[in-house]
Length: 183
Image: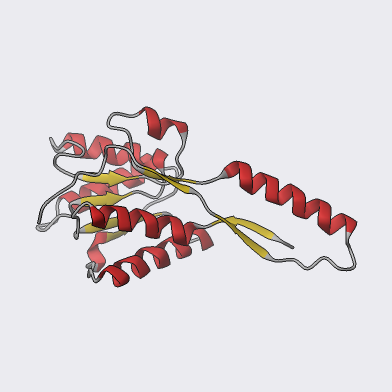
């Protein structure tokens, strides 16, 4: 059957490029559990870092659970306790970031002055937080529309319909959570 998918590889790459353009080289990535979405995001992260010539130590990559602020908070604590902590932390989704935000505040740090952060998904919540979260918004409307169009085609053209993968691009939402740093 046809799969209509959000282009996670591209989304993460765009976030990494934005973080890099703001002077960050020590970028940590907290990803969700092992799913095809996570695999594409990790690939996008490593691909972007390689293209930009930045080496990311393995201990900057942490696993948490999607939509679970507690596990992202725990991963954030581990990153902040490193002897050489990152200057920017990427979260698996905007909701999980809340756990990271709480942990950052517990450490007496402020976003973005002491540490920069990004989310993923572009949910409404991310845009009402202070500071406004930099995130990558998935185009859920286009995902739904493509799914409907392809479902109709598969029914109407049973004999000629060929299932495929369709990648739907999202867009960067630039907030105030990534500080421009000089290095």
